[in-house]
Image (cartoon, rainbow, N blue to C red; front, side):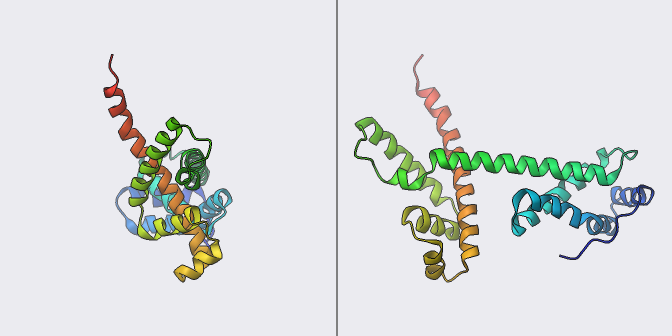
Length: 205
């Protein structure tokens, strides 16, 4: 990623903002070039991964572009941009944490797939329902993510073994597993949200 040039003083950024608001793409490209490294560094501190930081950087600039008309031009643009960046990164962190908690609580695929000896009939019934939901959620994943999840969390292969089997670097394997688990949690949440109205309507008053 190319380094940013020195950010201009407030009196010079204001004309760029004005041009952006008038639809000047070149002015927007200049703003992105001026502040991209600053935003990326903030994102990287939150996620610690280059690819995720790149994605967050894109999200920040999209949010900034959409919010540009609401920016108080009397304020410092750089300070505002940093605030937007941090808030979006915090939201991302909280969302990922909730999704990981959901995975730990509800999408432990090994536990879901293997009944315990102490399971009661009710436990087995509930486990069967969870496994069915898990299978539906897995089917919604992209094939590459689904394969990585199955090999790691169900077949319990090591990252190295999965990399050998798929013919990809271990870093790619880890990325697919992380993305797959996150998407799997989202699918589980969606499926539960669909089931809850059905459950409520099925309860007699």
